[in-house]
Picture (cartoon, helix red, strand yellow):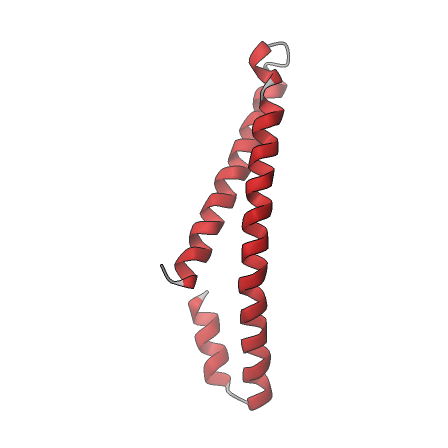
Length: 88
């Protein structure tokens, strides 16, 4: 899997975690008296932990991109910047 594919997969994972949290919040609002709502904060904590892990991986990827963009601008290589932008 290329780095670009990994980033896309990480973003998909983060989106799923956010949907899980949003669904649980909606469920808590709609069924605040239901016993199953008591377990949802644990699901939210798990989703938040997954999102933080993805965020940390993405930060590393974007730091590499930022360094490449800085290097390209220092060299005057507009082509490299265009390629980096095209990748994302």
